[in-house]
Length: 218
Image 1 (spheres, rainbow, N blue to C red):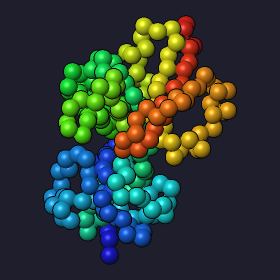
Image 2 (image 1 turned 180 degrees about the horizontal axis):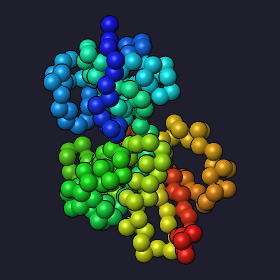
Image 3 (image 1 turned 90 degrees about the horizontal axis):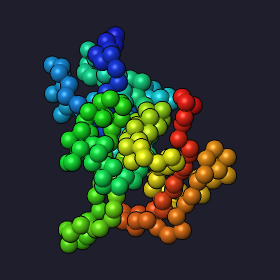
C-alpha cells in the first residue's frame, strides 16, 4: 500500500506522456530529477487519472503536461497533472533571431522566464535544401495565460516599429469549423488566408489577428 505523499517540487515541472492504459500512465520528465528512486521504471513518473486536472481525464500519448512531483514510499508520481495547451505561431526569420538568438540560443532562458515549452521548426525540401519560406514555425506549450503572455513577448520585437500589432497563426484546415470568426471579429480584426500557407505535414491556412498598439498604459 502507498504511504503518505511527500511533495518534492515547489513549482510544477514538465514532462511528456509516453504511455497510457485506461486509468493510469507514465510521464517522461523534461528536466533532471535528483532522487534516489528516479532510476525505477527507467526514470519515468507514474500518473493516475485521479491526479489529472480535471480528475479522471485520460491523457493522450505525446501530450506535454506539467505536474508536481511526489513520493509515497513506493516510487515517484505526478499530482495536479495538467495538459499544456499549444499555439503555433509564424515568425519571420529576422524577428525570430532577434527574439531567440541567431541559432536559438536564447530559447531556454525564454522558456524559463515565461514558464512555457517552445519548439521551433524550419521547412526544407525533400532533398534537404531550404524551402525558401520566409518564416519559422514556433509551437508554444503552456497554461493558457502563460501561452498568451509568451506569444506577446515573442512577437513584440517584430511589431515594435508598427502602430498596428498583429500575430499570424497556422490554422489546420481540419479545424476551421471550430473557430468562431464572428466572435473574434468583435474583439479585433481577423483575417484567414484564401490559400494554404503550408501543406506538410498538414494543410494549414494563416490566421492573422490584428490590434491597435496600447498607448498611455491602456
